[in-house]
Amino acid sequence: MAGTTLFAIGCLARCLPWWPVTVVGAVVAGVGLPWTLVAAVTAVQTHTPSALLGRVSATANTAMFGPLVAAIPLGSAAVHLGARPPLLAAVAICLSAAAATSDGRARPRHGCPSRSSPGIGRSVRSTPSTSANRDNGGPSP
Image (cartoon, rainbow, N blue to C red):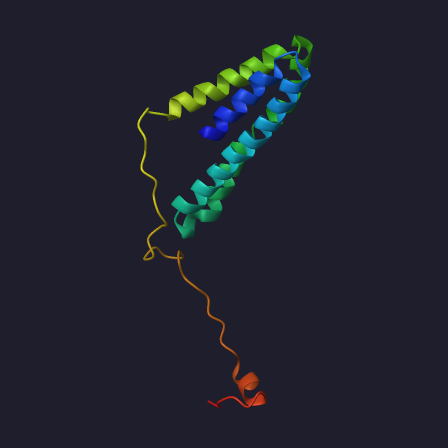
């Protein structure tokens, strides 16, 4: 939610006519948007059972990046409205999404997923091959 709010603040800053604030707004939006997307992808990967991870990840990526198909032509048409109205619409959408997902209470942070979960916390051990042990003078089987 913090990334969405930062993106909205960056859009608002880009509406101001003073170029230093516009540059700062672009940087803030450039931090906020990836922060939101990385958090969403991380949530999908950590809260999805390993058997469903491929399908859920594909659906989440479609939901996150699919709207670009419509946003590109709509953005081209919005250029005729001027610079401020599309940015203010983006601010309204981002802040509405942040407000809709926030219930006003602080949520406890969850630690690492349970070690008993399948596919989580397993380590892969590499064991040297038997022939490598014989070649190096190691124990034979």
